[in-house]
Image 1: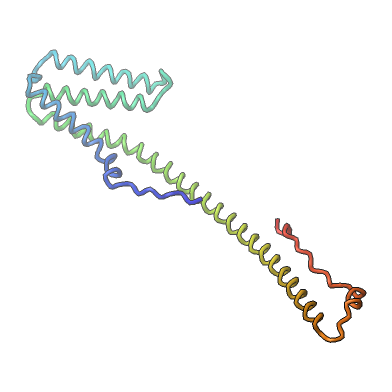
Image 2: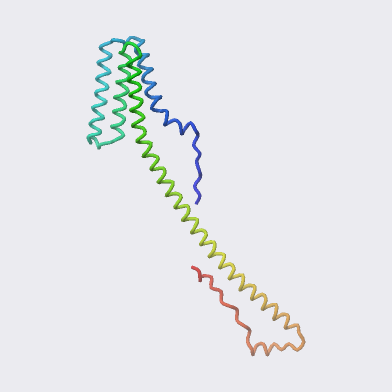
Length: 203
């Protein structure tokens, strides 16, 4: 009945919060490494990154518009890829840090804005699940309490009947030992009947 409680590690809780910043920072650093290895002012590299970013953005637009099932996850992934390619291209092509840092800040802010939407949805779903689980647990506990009370009442009824039978048997044995006991008189008068024990009266 009772579900195990899972305590998540603090790193597992913090990882989704820092993932967007880590992602954009990684792309920025890779772009600057690419810049230091010959990508600065390279027209061919710039054209390649623009083409890749535009292709990813186009794929995201088609996915968001409903082509291919209108998958929101696919659209988000395509737009994120387009933004990462654009950031990497600017970081690799630009001279200096000013423009790459500015683009990194914008990309990070956008990434957190998109992530916050999914975090809110996940929080609502988790809260609804916890409420549903709590309701089921309370319902099961109520059923268990009712069944325990019913079983206790049946046991008490059976115990009362057994005690009555034992007392009657003791009284008959004691009476048989008394002087002047006449068993024929007992047979004529009849033995008191035991109370009927209905074990199903609460079911």
